[in-house]
Length: 116
Image (cartoon, rainbow, N blue to C red; front, side, top):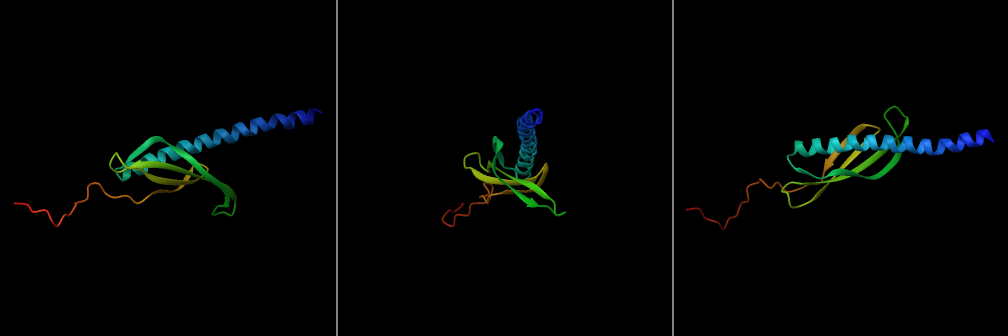
């Protein structure tokens, strides 16, 4: 009976540990999104990332690890919204990608305009 109680008390403790570790990884993902947005001089929107998936994979050492995916949104011009994706293993960011977007600072060539 006592072993049964101990095992049942481990369930909520395990859940809390998993939640806490996930929250730490999410914070690292937010920092990575901010860094990438700053690097490309785009605006990081909403100040957060959203977990959009996870899976177990083998790392470079052959160990089974949890890979997490987070999405976020950014804007090159303050009006339009584009998506970004972060892939992590534990607190290590494997990749941060931005959806292709038009450069708002690019020269807009209009062959019909004439300058005098």
